[in-house]
Amino acid sequence: MKNLLYTLQAAILVFFVACATDKKEDPILKEAGTIHNEAHEMGEGVEAQFTAVDSLSALLAAKKMPAADSLVASMAAVKQSFETWEGNIVTVPGMKHNHAEGEHAHEAHKPAPDVTPEQMLDIQKEMKLSIEKIKSDLEATRAAAAALLK
Image (cartoon, rainbow, N blue to C red; front, top):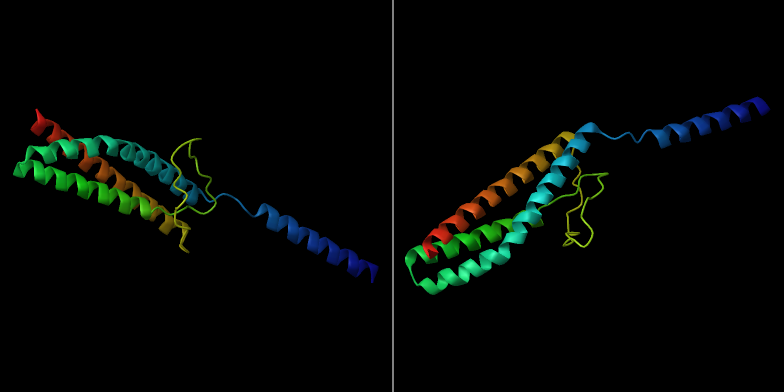
């Protein structure tokens, strides 16, 4: 009886040790987390430019020209794309956020959907591609606005 009790205790101990050490970091989720952080940093940079974009939009609106009106609409579309992108950010399971202290908080990240690590990696890659496109569109629109305002 004592032997059975010791065996049972040893089995329980092994089970708990195995469960505690089974939380190895998935390399695919780690890559997804890195991509998430890169996209987030890029998003912060894009967001910081919107104050200047709002000022440019006001200057363009005063021009009363079709080209200026078109650029104002383009700037508004880029800003809307950014807001949609920001609203679709999802958290990578087990990832620690690297938000800088005092940085604008985006704690409204959607919880991680129930997907495989490979699918999460694909989601994060797509989110990064989206913010790269938004950044490119914003830069092109700002350059066109600056040229029109000369």
